[in-house]
Length: 196
Image 1: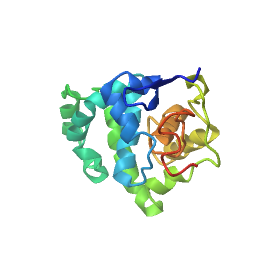
Image 2: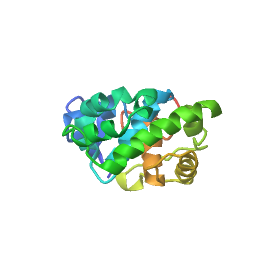
Image 3: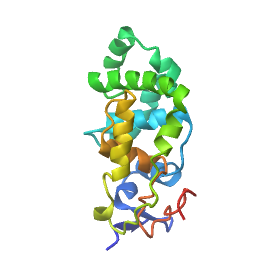
């Protein structure tokens, strides 16, 4: 058993990506493709933090509202948010209204801006790319953390980031193509160009 589902288009996807059109679209066109720019990485880092304890589908459905509420995840603009913005965000039913996560996102934007003098967010994150990537055949073989994600989380926290534990860091690494956890046999396996 490989935990892959053949879609009506003949393409193999993991079960989680075959159950909902929004998840399928995300899996087919975004998840696991390299993201190296600051704004793209800040958005993914923020959404992974908001996802903690929730399903990814909830976050995907709210993503347009998150983008509107957080100025398209422009780090400079979010870094300038103040107490009035926190109140506005806590009143926004379109996003996840968790004060700690909202305040962490604003603080993480400030940390992102501060990192520019030290190579930037992209350099920090991608410096933790592992020498090898997993080759899972089943969902049970997909790791949820790694030695590299533990180091990445520690490094981010040392720079002032919050809500970035090893599991969140590993999910970020998957989302931005640093590791390829597409199941062997999936039509997306190896599609990032980062791993052969």
